[in-house]
Amino acid sequence: MVVKNYYEILEVSVDSTTAEIKAAYRKLARKYHPDINKSTDAIEIFKEITTAYETLSNPEKREKYNIIKGIFKTEKTTTSSQKAQEEYQNTVKNNRKGFQEEVFAKQKTAQKTSDKIQKHKKFSLIKWFKLLFAKSKKNKRAKENKKPQKGQNITTDVTITPVEVITGSKRVINVLTTQTCPNCSGHKFINAGKCSECNGTGEISTKKRITVTIPKGIKDGAKLRLKGEGGAGKNGGSNGDLYINIKIETPTKIHFDKLNIYYNVPITPYEAALGEEIKIPTFDGTIKLKLPKNTCSGQKFRIAGQGIKKHGKIGDLIITVSIEFSQDLSDDELKLYEKLKNLSHDDLRKNLINEG
Image 1: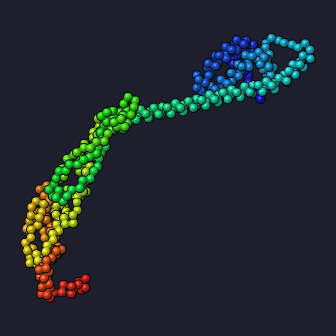
Image 2: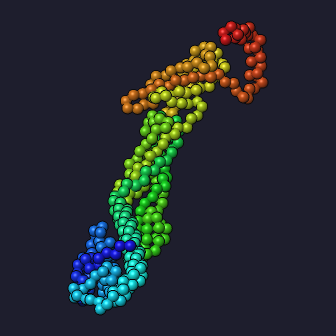
Image 3: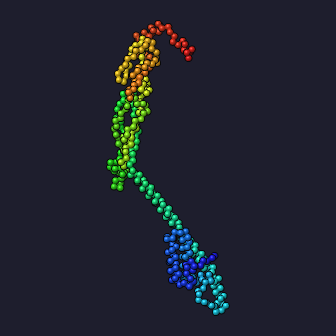
């Protein structure tokens, strides 16, 4: 094992006194201490000057070190005899091994100390970055919470009748919405405790009655938007909007196509055969329709200008008739049908196969 020149490391001469060695060590320690010097070599240099100082500042260790390195002070020393020279050689031989082991142990200890310092610095740096990131995230979240935020949009369904499609209407609906808690003003806590009014949410639910105008001719599946009728905004932000999905009741006798109204109207057998004038109830009164003789079930009639009025335009009323029988025929009515059966000679189904 090669032992370094501790005098050169401390920048002193072999004749330096213990006080001079101590002063040189303090000067170099201040210069290369890891907490002051951040260079990559500082730790290694600091270990070397520490080991050198611990050796040269101790007279006994210094003497052993001088013997190993063959270093003598400038004063000329002589041996009185060959015996003294031999004793000197034996001393060097016996002490060299133990001293080298001592130096190695100190270097190993210094290395462990350096590793601990480096590990502590690395851990401290990681911890510092984590704390900095957490603080930055917290500040960002707090800043976001202070920004004006628009309230939540609300969607609800409203089912209307065919009459409302034709005439339009006004509906009063109940909407469950949210607003800032008046007790804690949205801060969620009061006097370091959770707000009892909103249970720490900062908001409370409330019902609101809203009048909705249903325009004429609205289609099934249409969506109405009422601006500002949704959830309350936060930090001065605007309220959300209320979206209403329109659904139209679908009775079997009435349906719509654009501005046209399609109406299924039942008629009696005698009205169909004789061509009677019938009255048809509509949404704003009644209209009369003159049926031709021998009207068939499923026959269509168009009445212009009786559909939906919208934006200066008006649709038509398309009537489809279907021949229906009373479910409670009297005996006289049954006798008349029996007489009709005997008078009729037509076979309405004779060409059924050929027509198919």
